[in-house]
Image 1 (cartoon, rainbow, N blue to C red):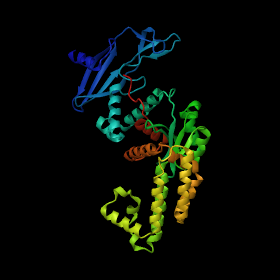
Image 2: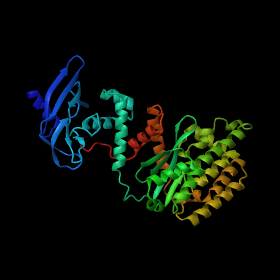
Image 3: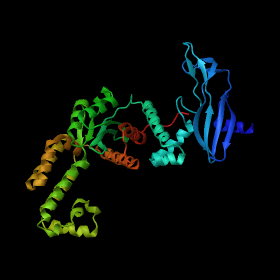
Image 4: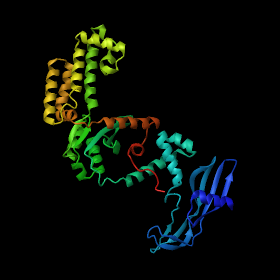
Length: 406
C-alpha cells in the first residue's frame, strides 16, 4: 500500500486515478505500474459534460521515465463513456496523449536528448527504447509544432530560398527560411519552379507574399521564376557568397592556365584564394611575388577584391548600378577571358547582383542553415524518404514549440 501511494505522488495523479499495483522484475530490471480509474463519472472528450462510466477499454501500456535503473511502464484500462449520439468514447489519460504510447515526461526527455545529440540512434540507445519510438516522437513533435505555429501576424519582409541535396541521384529539396529569425519555414521536395511555387504558396498567405521586400537566392532560374511569380513586390538578391565564389573559380582557372608556363605559380592556390589577413608567412611571400610578377592571375585577383569593396558602399539601386557598371568596365578592360565570362554572367543577372551590393540581407543565414542540415544528414547517415528528411529539418531548425503541453 505504501508503494502504491508513493507512485501516486510521483506520477502526480488526479483524484480519480489511482495506482493499484507495482511489480518489479529484478532479473530484467523492469517496473510495471498499474493505474485504475476509480471515479463513477468522467468528462466527455467531446462535450466536457460529466457522464457515467460505460465500461473500460482493453489494457494499454505506456513507456515512462526510468525509475532508478528500472525500465518503467504504466498499464491501464482507460474508462469509456457513451455520448449523446450513442458513440462510446475513450477518456484520454492525464499522463499521455490520446494515441500516444509514451508518457509526456518520457517524450519530453527524448526531445531534450535529441536536441543535444542530433542523433536518433544514440538517443534510442541512451533512453533504452527502439529507434522507431524516437522517430515517431520526432514526427509527432514536428506535427504538434507546426499546428501550434501561428503565422497569422507574421510579416516576413525578407526571405531566403536555397537548395539542399537529399540523396544520391541529383535529388534535392528546396528550403525556405527567414533570415531575421534564423528559422526554416518549410521544405519542399525538388528544386524546380513548381516545387518553389508550391513552397511559397503553402507557407505564406497571399497578403504575406505581397509584403516580402527581398528574397535572397543563388542564380537558379527556377527559383527566380517562382519568386517573380509569387512574390510580386520582392527584389531578388543574389547571394554574396556565390558571387565571390564565381570570381574565385575564375582566379583558379587563370592560375591553372598560367601555371603551365610559369613554375612560380605552382602550389599557389591558397595564397590567391584565401583572405589576405589569413595568409601564413610563407603564403604571404608567395602572394607578393605573384603580384610583383604582373601575372594575369594577379589582375584577376584584383578584380575580385575590387568587387568585394562594392558591398555596402551604396544603399540604393541607382547608385549601386553605377558602381557595378564601373567595376564591370574595369574588369573587361583587363582582357582576361575567364573573368569576362563571370562579368557576362553578372550582367545577365544584373538587378540580382545590384541587389546584393546595396542590401545587407543575403543568403549567409541560409548557408549556415544548409551546413546545419548537412550535419544532421551526416549524423543520420542519410534519409530514405522526403517526409523523414523534412520533419527532421523542421524539428531541429524550424523554431517550433515541440514539447507536450503537460
